[in-house]
Amino acid sequence: MRTIVLGTRRSNLALTQTKWVIEQLKQLNLPYHFEIKEIVTKGDRILDVTLSKVGGKGLFVKEIEQALEQGEIDLAVHSMKDVPSILPDGFTLGAITTREDPRDALISEGHVKLADLPSGSIVGTSSLRRSSQILAKRPDLEVQWIRGNVETRLRKLKEESFSAIVLAAAGLNRLGYTKDFVTEYLEPEVCVPAVGQGALGLECRTNDQELIDLLDKLNCPTTSKTVRAERSFLHTLEGGCQVPIAGYATLKDGQIELTGLVGSPDGKVLLHETKSGDSPEELGKSVAASLLDQGADEILEKVKRDLDS
Ligand SMILES: NCc1[nH]cc(CCC(=O)O)c1CC(=O)O
Image 1 (cartoon, rainbow, N blue to C red):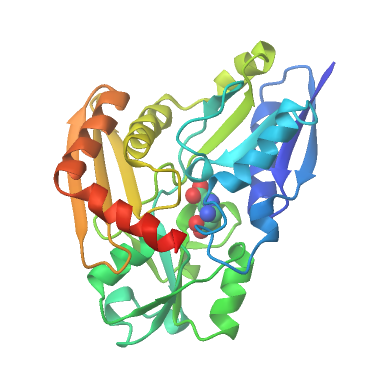
Image 2 (cartoon, helix red, strand yellow):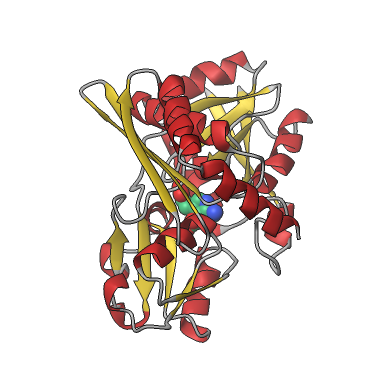
């Protein structure tokens, strides 16, 4: 009987997600054993600077891919929003699972909603996408970088000078926080989610056909299709680093509807586009092209220059 080794980061969220996938695999009642191997990535070790400066989201994924390549692990469970838009040769996503709540969640001291936070209140986030959209709504607030896993950020909300923080609803749900813990869910009309937010990607080696066949049983066709559109959009715009880009797609009567957004980190410029189509790849490219026509490349170039300096 084959043992499938799942590699995961050590955070509570990563472990919870990996255990959830094992449960789903076990329910298939197939003759496999499952084992978890914890991996500490560079992104987990470096916590003192903004994530964008140490190399962005790809950081978490790269070291896990090395373990896959060397056969130390067979399968990696990722939050899709942390997975770069193109995987290196030799790796594939065997499945994208059913999406959790894709929205961002605002959690504030005293449960004060975004619209009601006093002027000058400090909101903690380390995402340019979130800062851009929050400052567009509330230019009188102040955004400060906050790093660390979900529990660390919640502790900092209590102990430091933040009035509110923004976290993905999906992560909170998976960790078992109840709905009344959240002050306000930010609807996609207010804050367009990150590409892939709320979906899990199951990555394995391209030559592991046995595992690819197994993972296919956990694939959610709707989530796959919408996340592919979002990732095609991201790929068309991306220059490699973490940038203020948001993308969220839904499926209605077989048609994908994709909203893309590019904003300046201070929220003074927000470019939006929503389009429908049936090819995820073409739709992603088309929404990206519209934003480039509106001047998205200028915003993104400036962000990259500021990160490099
Ligand atoms: N960047 C960290 C990260 N990656 C995925 C999630 C949440 C789960 C998800 O989006 O699926 C989080 C935490 C957060 O943004 O609050």
